[in-house]
Length: 240
Image 1 (tube, helix red, strand yellow):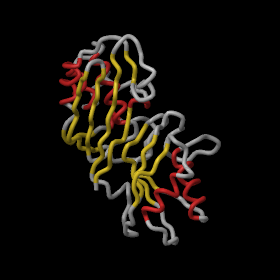
Image 2: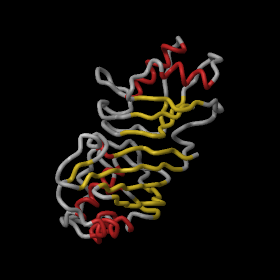
Image 3: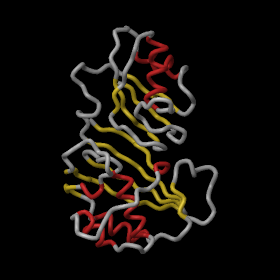
Image 4: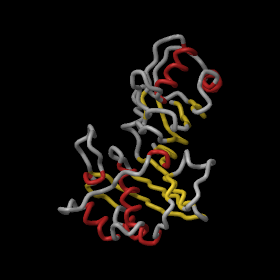
């Protein structure tokens, strides 16, 4: 099992795709160079294009008896600066990094001021108009608990069970930066980005806080989103 960090700005997402750069492609290429054998990895979260990670978890199988500490150093030598393995450890054959996860923590960052910033715009959604953060917090409370989040799942999802539990939805503000911390037992396709995008609509005054409840309930005439851009989203950690 590897814990991996990456800047997803210049990648078409985690999952391997032909003819475009992906995080999975970079990791598999580096592992195959080190191990000198075909290698396929599995990830706890298949993050979208532009999404970042501080604590992505991946697994792979190898017969090579290389110590975990040596593996970290060797693999990093063959990775671009945007991707880095921070730790490695052996796990049982029965371990599955996605299905054995009991929770994930994501963060979403918004730069809320008129001028942008060349230092954080790769990692934040720049919104120049003022946001009503108290209204956004009121709307976020509705999302806490166990619900059917089908309204916050983008088309293209392969899953059928849309019931999830959100344990935490904090909206912190420091100067002109908003940081949302969202923890749950699992997330649907683009679920976090759709929740953030909806709350931003509340903050802009285009929705009211109670509309979040109506969207969650699937009320006619109410829809989530649009989804927040991938650049502000980061997978902070996966819990087991």
